[in-house]
Length: 289
Image (cartoon, rainbow, N blue to C red; front, side, top):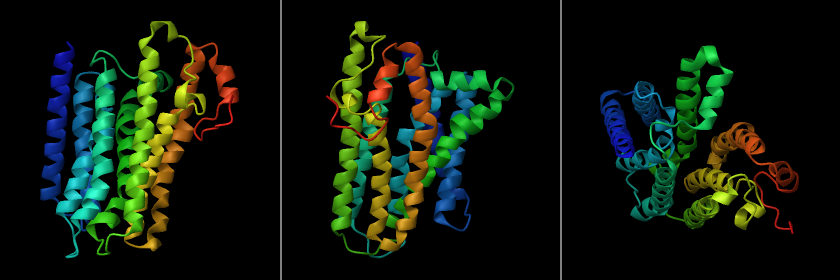
């Protein structure tokens, strides 16, 4: 059953990216990023169709981590300046590739297959019973796509129209973004090791990085998108207004993802309420004893 689920997932993503690319070469909306946005939405609709047919919206989950790489590659191929820089492409591409491979692999390790949906989606269906189709498409599929697309937008300035020489900014944000993925990576591995012990099923993880932050993996995720924004500053410091892009990601985690995960943990773990009182949601408190 699991191999069947993986096969369906692979087919869905193959057609998703294929039709997204078809959209890019077929339509011209007058701006490169509008073309990318349309292709991104087309790809999302393909995944939505598959997830609807197989009644599992969790089929969308890896889309978040898969899609940055093809968009990054397309931006390189669409460079609009003669002053292209292979070094800059590498400085940006290394953390993106690391992020894509690591997060997708992390999903693969924990995905049970098409027979199970994420509890967050089930909660949304329960809350909005009469609007399940609406919530499924706009809330579970389209909204995250738009957030990711917005957070990738700074790469248009960092790559496609950037004719500036490689500078300290490029190197700094390459290291910054890699470290953000490392933070997310280490956090997830610590949690995986903790969950392997079945006696911890109803116990709160409060060791390693999780001792100082309730969601260190989310912190790493958020910092990754701030890192991508930072690359745009190498084209012009005037691009600082693009900080609204990662701020939108931060807002989504603060007002949606973190509360949903905290509420879930409060229901499953008796000691989580005390953990919440003493441990910050994101920014680590290294003075916790």
